[in-house]
Length: 117
Image (cartoon, rainbow, N blue to C red; front, side, top):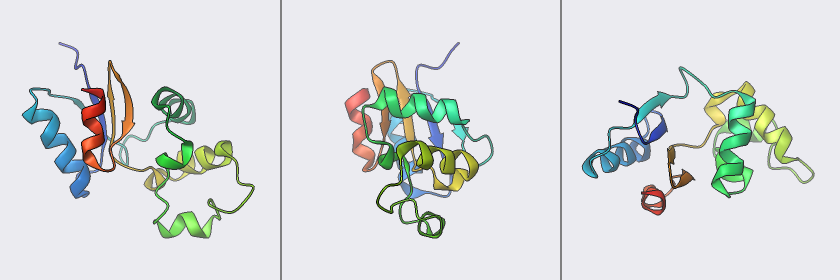
């Protein structure tokens, strides 16, 4: 049976763990993609951003030191450059990302998942 939800998950992240628990409490058993093990490719990242209606910057872990080292929040950096960086460095992907038939959300705070359930 195909899952009706997918979560890009990092088991070391409490927000990601809590979002996964919330999905399960709601009776969903999502497909769990540990994005540090199986990172999304560049095309998938672009599709997630487009389908979410959220800005590409929402998908970027701006607090990660690599983000600053790469200058990803500097003026003039494009969304395409940010997505290229996330594709090359999956640890820069904000988490968790949840996909349901009702949409895609970066679930920070985790309650954002309720928008697509």
